Length: 132
Image (cartoon, rainbow, N blue to C red; front, side):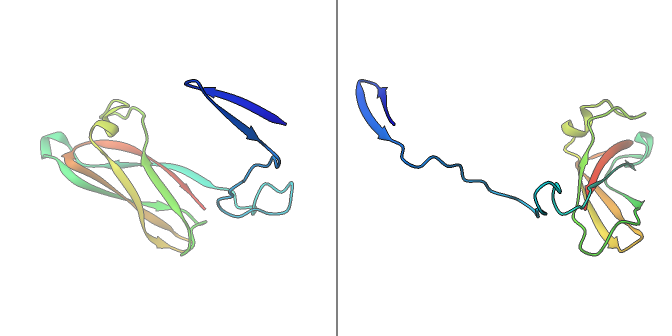
């Protein structure tokens, strides 16, 4: 099949002989119909507390998360949830640049969520967790 494409009065003829799509797979895949390697992501939400406003602001908050599914090779992603807490409106975590990571993985026990407020903050923020 031959297509003619006109761009700014320039005519270009393109002949497509081999129609195919390149697919990139990220992660592992199992046999067709299995939906992958069989690992179901674990999701949780926890609350970190930077302290009380009357006690000043902090730039670091740490909370321990119990999670029996954790292994030394687990991949765990954490991010601030855009939800209200007793101390903050939904957009506050984004406005304050709150970030979080999983650290100190302890196989079969859990891990720590370490949250950072680069300009200092106070009060409680919810952190979303997903891991395999």
